[in-house]
Length: 44
Image (cartoon, rainbow, N blue to C red; front, side, top):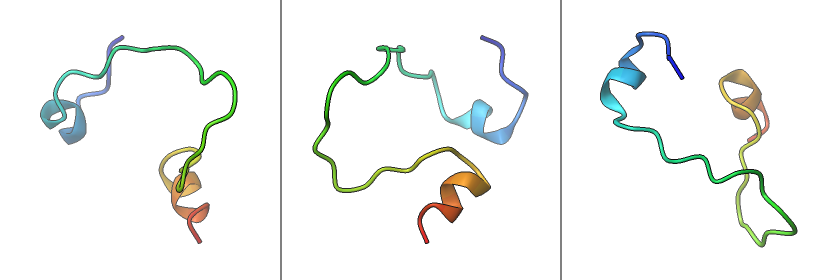
């Protein structure tokens, strides 16, 4: 996949291998849904 030439892409390194969707329940303390303003507004 080609990404836009941003600072993040230039410095983040190789993305992790896609291991598919989450199946079943997960016991977690924090979940961030979305990114950008969507993720930020969900933390309020």
